[in-house]
Structures are given as C-alpha cells and as structure tokens.
Image 1: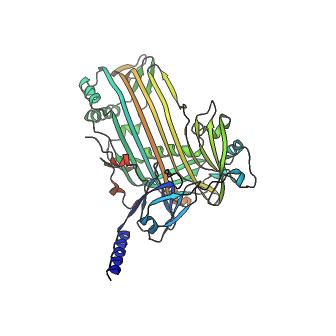
Image 2: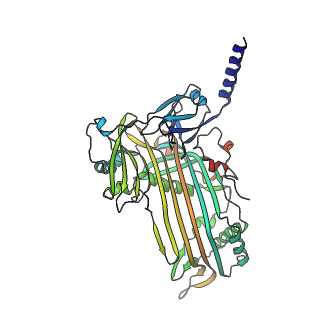
Image 3: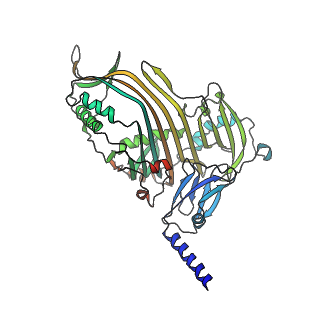
Length: 490
C-alpha cells in the first residue's frame, strides 16, 4: 500500500510541475563529440512557431498555450531531425543530435555536379527565383543587439570653447567618469510587415516589447547631449555647423526632424528603427559583395564538397571553403542540390585575414574579426529567412585635433560664431553582435499591408540587469550567461 501511495504522490507532484511550468531551458549537443550546436532550429509544430538556440547552444522554449503531447522538432542541417513531445523535454531538456552526412562516394544524386565552384556560381544565378517575395508577409520577429566596448586609452586635451556651459572642468569630469569597459543590449519583439515595391523591400514595424540595458549614467555626458541638442535646434536660417580637422572640413546637415525632435529617454522613433532594421536585412540579400565575397568572387577561394545531407526532403551539398591570397573568409555552406539555394552558411575571417583597415593622419580603423551565420527554410518553392546573426570586432584609433564650428553665411567670408577645439587620443575595441529570428511567418493580403499604419514611436523599457520576468510567455533567444549576470554600473 505504501508503495502505491508513493507512486501516486510522485505522479501528482510531476503533474503539478508540468502544469505550472511555463518554460523549458536546455542545450543542444552533437551526440558524438558533445559539442554545442548553435542556432539550432526548434519548432513547435502545432503552433507553427519556433525559436533557435543561442551561440552557445542554449535554448528557452515558451510553454504558454502548449499541451504536453505537442510535438517539438529540433532541426540542425547536417543532423537527423529529433522529434519529441513537450513532456519528453520536461523530463530531459538536453538534446543530442546524430550527424546525418553521407560521403560523396556513398550516394548517387541525379545531375551531380563534380566541380564545387560551379555549384557556388549557381547560387547567385538562381537567387531571384529561390528567394523572391511572392506575396506580402507578416513576420513575428525577435532581434537582439549587443555592444561591448573596451577603452584602454581615452584622453581629451581641451583647447578652446566659447560656448557657455562647455568648459574644461566638464570635459575633465567626463574623461574621468567614462567607463573603460561597457556593455549594452537591446531586445526587440514585434511584427514585421514585408512587401516588395518596385523591386525594393518595404517594411513596417509593429512593436510588442522592447527592453534595453544602458551603461553607467554619466552626468557630464547627459549635460553635453542636452547642450548640443539645444545648440543644433537653435541653428538659424543662414547658420550651419562644420567639423574641421587640419585641412579637412565637413559641413554637418541638421535635419528638420532633429530640430523639431525632443529628447525622450523612454521612446524611440520608429522611422529610425525601421531604417536600422532595413539596413540589417540587406545582409540577407547576398548583394553586399564584401560580406558575401565567396559567392561573388569564387576564383578567390578553394572549395571542397565534404558530403551530402538532407533537410525537408531535399538533398543538400555540404561545401567547405578557404581563401586564396585575395580571399578573406573560411566556412561551410549548405546548398540544395536541385535548386542551388543557399540554405545555410556559417563563416568568418580566416586566420591572419582582416576586413576594412586604414590608418592615416592620426585616424585608424580595423575590422579585426567577423563571423556570420544565416539559415533559410523552404516553403513551397521559396526559401524564407529563418534567422541570421553577425558579429563584428573593430579597433578604432584616434590621435588628432578636431574643431566644431558654428558659422553664419556671408557674401565673401562666412562668419565664425562659436567654436570648440580639442585633441583626442583614444583607442577603442568594439564588439557588435546582432541576432535576428523569425518566430512565425504568415501570408497577408496586399490591402492588409497597405492599411497597416506604423506608429510614430515605440516605448523602451530600460533595465539595470536582464530580467527574465519581462519575457515570460514570449518566444525569445536564450541570453548567454554573461548577458544574464551583467549588471549596470552605478
């Protein structure tokens, strides 16, 4: 009798846990070598929605409106898809995937192409057919932007200012209080309305929630921001601002939007965020020749077919590439054998390779590291974006005098109204990481797209530390341990 009661109690406790559990956290691993599998596609089939694992293979799955018997699929190209129930995951959230790769001599594919370079060339040849936008869509998306900055050197030699409120003491306090290391991030969840207009991508954004962490508050920086905001807004009709360094000068354009805008710490203008998202999405078009050099300039690379795999019933080539003398990248590509669509790419700068690099007249900029990952899913005959991520690490060096001048246009010589002059001596190491996930993708009508009106602003929730309660019942990318433990400095 005691045994039956114990079993009943265990069952009841388990049932309560399953009923009350609102999320599952776990990790996805390679079954053979136990290495984590970043950006694994995780799909709740009944809800037609999904998430991905983060760069460390960790994932979080929202269980709101989910049954214990619902199916969850774990997909990673080159591995056998694992199909489990929610109840299976509650019992064990560590997922191990088996490799599903066949050597070229083990399988015969119709229309097999022996030369991998010819396969690469066909990706761009078939791009418009494979990735076209056939109809308007409404995507639920999650975007995470992370920035880490290290300032090993930061000195300002303040020389001149005839602007009231901006003096040596303020600059010295600013220099003293600026953090040598800082972290910030923004998490955005919302809907993206997408359509093609005269071959141009047109998007509209409908925010659900935006959470941001800001670094240490610096009183002097706040004062400087407000001071220049006031100065720019008071620019007269025949007045303008110019930045000058040595013999070089550049006139600053002060838009009417800036003049009429007010500083609001808890909102962002959606038009600006829309432009930001649109710029980032340009990466997914393969048209950025420098970022997709191995597609546009295949003669700069060595390619080798490592094997074949399957995804969604398609045979897929696995192609590794390394740079020749003029190439920059190394990585792995997954290309559909029948359609020549690039389904997934994982790549980075090869050893001893860098991106943009210049150092001239006291100004230096170097892209020291880059890595990118992208994945498309086939829907009918079209390949639709599921996620992409990019990471840039750059070094900026500045050792030069600058002056900011307010001038008034005159017939012969423009009059100098105000001037700030200082010499900057600084070195900054910056890391920028972007993760973009399509949670759900629905077709909509043209009228639905046209009738949706984007709001003027979106609200921002600022936090001192990552707060998982803010994302309860939402689908997001699991934050890294570093991101969860980082706390804003006081």
